[in-house]
Length: 395
Image (cartoon, rainbow, N blue to C red; front, side, top):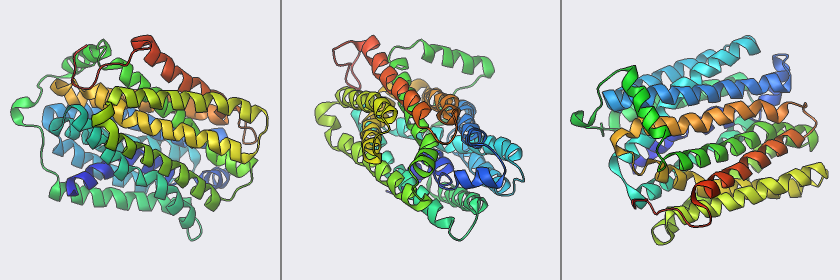
C-alpha cells in the first residue's frame, strides 16, 4: 500500500502542476498583465517540460536504474517550484514552468516503468487503474485547494505548496521506494542506442495504436483543462470556488471510471474497455461543438464534459497497459515515448483553446471534438470493427 501511494503521488505530478493553479490562472494573467492566450502558455510550457522530460528520464532509468533519476528529478522539481513563485513577469514564469515540467516528468515516467517492472498483462491494467485512483485525487482536490488557497494567498503561494509536495515525495521515495530494475536488465549505450529503441517502438504495431489513442485522449482532456477556467468563469460567470467544485466533480467521474476498469478488466479485457471509452469520448466531444455553437445552458455543456472525462477514465489505464504489454525489454523508454506523445499533443493544443479570447468557447469545443473523434478513428484504422487482442495475447 505504501508503494502504491508513492507511485500514485509520483504519477500525479502532471495534474498537480497544472490543476492546482487553474482557479488562479485568470488572476495570474491579470496580475502579470498578460492575455489569456499568453497566460495559457504557462500551461503549454509546463506540459512541454512534462513531455520532453520523460524522454530524458525514461532512457536514463533503463540505463541507471529507477531510483537515482527519480530522486534527482524530485529535488529539481521542488527548486523549480520555488523559482516559479518568485517569477516577476509572465515571460520569466514561462521558462521556469518548462523546467518544473522537465523535473516532474521523472516521477511520471519512472512510476509507469516501475509498474511494468513488477506487473504484466491485465494485472498491469489493474495496477494502473489503482494508480489512477490515487493520482485521481489530485485533479479532484488540487483545484479545490488552489481555489481555497486564493482566499488567503496569491497565485504565487500555490507554487510554494507544490515545492513542499515535491520535497515530501523525495523523502518518501528515498525511504520506502526500492530499486526495481536489476543491474543485469539495464541498458548500456548512448544516444544512438536510445534513438534506435525509439525507432523500434515507433514501428511497433503492438505499441503505436495505443500510444496514439492515449495521446489524443489526453489532448482532448487537456484542452478542457486549459479552456474551462475561462469558459466557466468568464462566459458563465462562476466563481473560482464554484469552478473548483465543478472541476472536482468531473475529476471524480474520471476516478470512478478507472475503478470500473479495475473491477471488470479480468472479466471483460482491456481492449473492450478501451473501445467503450473511445466511443464515449468521441460521442461527447462531437456533441459538445453543436451545444456550444447553440449557446446552450451551462448544464448541457457540463453534461458533455463529464461524459468526455468519464470516457477518458476508461481509456487511460487500458491504453497504457496495452501499449506497455510487450515492452518489458525497454519499459522506461516505452513509457517515455508514451508520455512524450501525451504531453506534446496537449502542449500543441492548449493555446488553441483561448485563441479567440476569453469570451467564446468555440475554439475549445472544436479542438475537443477533433481530438476525441480522431482517437476513435485511430482505433478503427488499426483494428476495424473487431476487438483488438487481449493483453498478453499475440497478434
